[in-house]
Structure formats: C-alpha cells, structure tokens
Image (cartoon, rainbow, N blue to C red; front, top):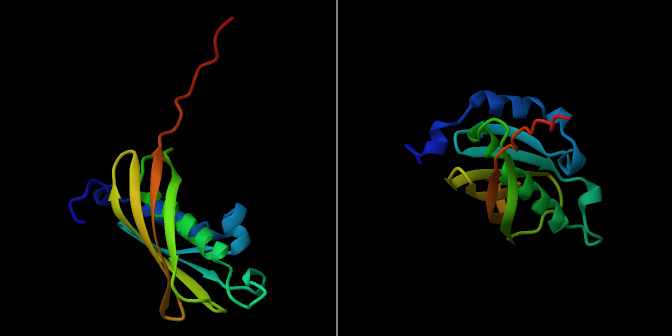
Length: 154
C-alpha cells in the first residue's frame, strides 16, 4: 500500500470535515444514522446503531440495512483521496452475510484495495459485538466534475 498514488493523495482535512459533518448527513445514511468515525489513508471506520425498526419480523437485522451501510462506506472511503469536485458512484458490490444481528452496533471497516484515476476496488468487513457478520467487496467509478459551460451569446 505505501507508495500507491492514492495513499499519497490522502487529504486529512477532507477526512476530518467528513467526520465533523455527521450531523449534517442527508438521505438514507441520515435515516439509518450512519456515523463516519475515523479515516486513515486508505481506510474508513463507520458505525450504525441497530434499531428495532431495522429488524425483520423474526427479530434479525434486515440485510438491506447492512447493504446500505456497505454501499455508503464503499464510496465515502474514497473522498479524501479524490480530486476536488470528483464524486464516487458505486458500480457494483457483492456481500456475504455471515452471522445474524439482533441488536448492538454495526462497525464497518472499509479498505481501498486499488484505486486509479477512474475507478477503485474496496473491501468492507462488518462486525457486530466483536464478530464478523458480513464481508463485501465493490467497485466504484470515480467521476470528474462536469466542465462549466458558458451560455451562448445572442
């Protein structure tokens, strides 16, 4: 990992700002209460408190909750490594559900496996109560900002 271009491009200010803005999240991550806890070069730790409304009628955490957490950290881990204005779009991910979850806190550890200017591969391990409950890997497309187009003159 040392010597990789993306490790060298890690911007701790972007990482700190993302952690500091947990309360300003919007959309599904806000609804679920996903918290970005810690960034390091090439990795991110995030958490989510398991709430009763996330459980199935059988008392287990719905897999979609885990998948939403995985999808969120899959892209988020990249932002401190990307250029200004770029954004991360999940292309695909695969998840293995390994153990049921009935309560507590999910902790997701995302690690960049490879990153180029246009894409990245990330692995995510999700734990609950000190046991691995899911393992995932995904691909993300890195999208450049659109150039500003000047309006046509009269």
